[in-house]
Length: 89
Image 1 (cartoon, helix red, strand yellow):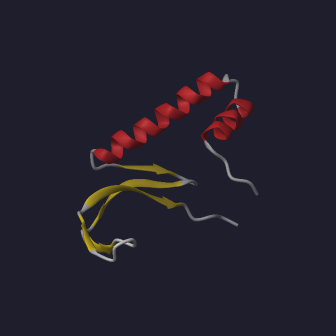
Image 2 (cartoon, rainbow, N blue to C red):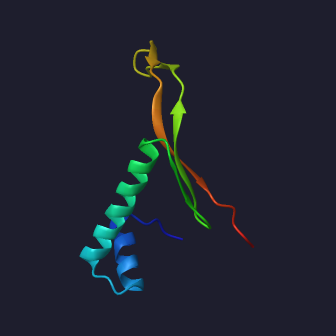
């Protein structure tokens, strides 16, 4: 099993469809933009058989600076969360 980056994913999509690499890149960029826009507005993107994308609040916390050992306050923030779908055997 090998890892796949964005370029490899674009090549794979272009190879499995009638799209050129440029069209596959445009389609992938559009999908990512739609997921970001939907989750930023409080929605969720559900892809059956793949998973669920949604925005999740990460609470404020205290962290430690490894170089100085000082405590650092990390503020609350929003983060994109992905929950994979259950695999069917």
